[in-house]
Image (cartoon, one colour):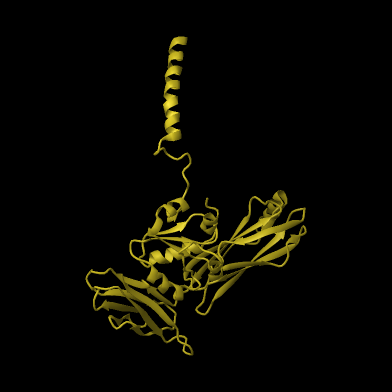
Length: 139
Length: 214
């Protein structure tokens, strides 16, 4: 009775060692916890990985933008849409990914701006998960 | 029936030491000239202990929430006044006001504000695009006037002579089509389309749409 159980335990233990090594070191191992994203949302590491193909859009107020913003970001918010949208169009090119951010994870401004851009037929528009706070706390 | 609801609210407030709200959700339909809406959310401290309103946050910079005081004795009533400024927003809007109290700091009450903002002139899309090298086919911009809006489109002009625009009235006084045609799409180009209206009569509104060749 003890024999088969012991054998099963040995087999399980033998399988556990390579499985643990794979989970810890394999370059394409699955993430332990998948970050939950709302539709149209993207994480900062993903946006950063896109590199030069991203046009950053700051949906906060002009005052907040004036204090500090993501390098290269263009200001585009609902309050100043009529004046800012043509400037955005001059900077944007088809094929560029657009990442919109506002002040925090809970703010809606980036979603509003992203939605209005999409309504105008501009594709590849994403909202930055965590917003400006995520950018500021990046490592 | 009303007495039963009142007693239930009173009991709930007493049991959990929370504020009893007269309503946590309000809906407004904006009128033509409105620039903002103000919603008042009334509450009563139905518990046996004083309650402090520790924090009032809004989901959007476009919404502000004002509170005359923060501490409420048992039985005392108050209100939070939320002001939502439209700032170019149109259509259905939903804003949230999160209220955190000393009674339950981990579970803020979420007050909701729904506003249907009337859009007297709707322009879709706000811009048309050609990619360099594609055929110079015309592209249309649809202009719709809201049902009871006393607005007419007077003219649509382009600031770039190489991008022509022609205005057609589809439904008299209600729907228009602005057809944009570039002379050539061999080079990048830009145009602003100026949409002139006759409303309000003393200072008629001008809207804009854009054309780009990229």
